[in-house]
Image (cartoon, rainbow, N blue to C red; front, side, top):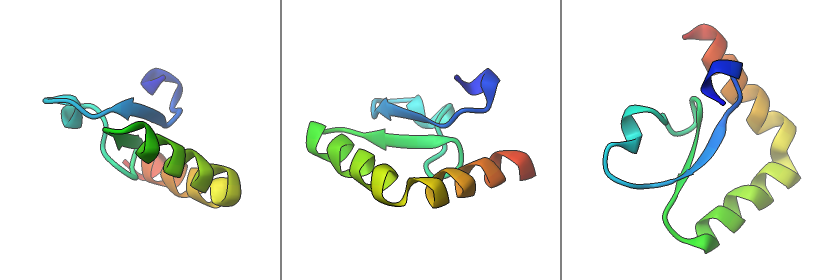
Length: 60
């Protein structure tokens, strides 16, 4: 997904932060409830959040 410029949701584990920069190119979660919360935010405020992450990717 990174090659396409799409933000990702990934399970948090050691060294993943080398690839996924929270709020820049994706989101990390440890528990299913955290993923559910993030997905709910994307649904309710998704366009704004996606635009923010896309802008960060563009600026980088």
